[in-house]
Length: 265
Image (cartoon, rainbow, N blue to C red; front, side, top):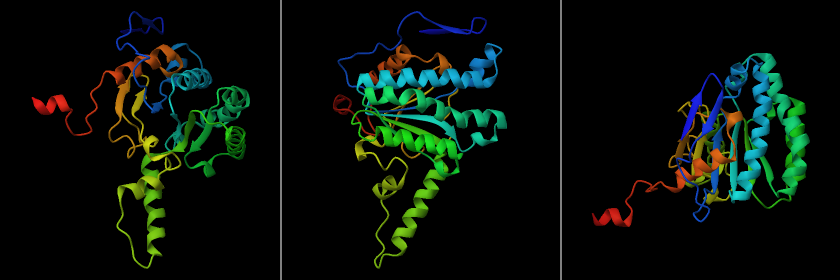
């Protein structure tokens, strides 16, 4: 159980509410809404950008731990299409973060056999951010381990609109227009680069105590397990990641049906 003490701005880990079992499967695809950087900084009377900087260090820790646990895909919501509404100073800092992150962390990613991918409307990012993204993808393209997938300038509604528009253009030139299927839409989404069994997150984690999806992977999380924690993103650590996975391991995933034992009752 976690208890939050605002006056101390820290979390006391008394006991694991959801014990992680290394013998049980871990989610193949985990997606995280990394929330709370600004509040973490404000609680310390620091500028908001200090929270984003600390949050970058958390990304490094969680990426390494998730990879070592056997996670296949880790998708991190880094910057949304709505985040451009923030103050210019903060946006500029956020656009510099990928440059600093990849500059310091790519060697470790190569060592951990982690492959970088970035999904989103990256053509709208500043040139220096685009260049950092391209370099990281190129430098890790030969890695065969976990995919570290950043959602950068990403919004799910815009993603779905783009997918439908792209699909429409394809079928409009066909002499016989095929019936549109879920699989066709799935392939045209930004997660379409992944194998079919890895496109949809099994577990979605949101930090900071907020309990909403915020335009993130709306199609892909139809049957995802959701886990909300009050921990602010800079405070999220490998122990809390295992707590979230432990919660996932305890759940009965039925996908709208019944488990065999339930059918007998």
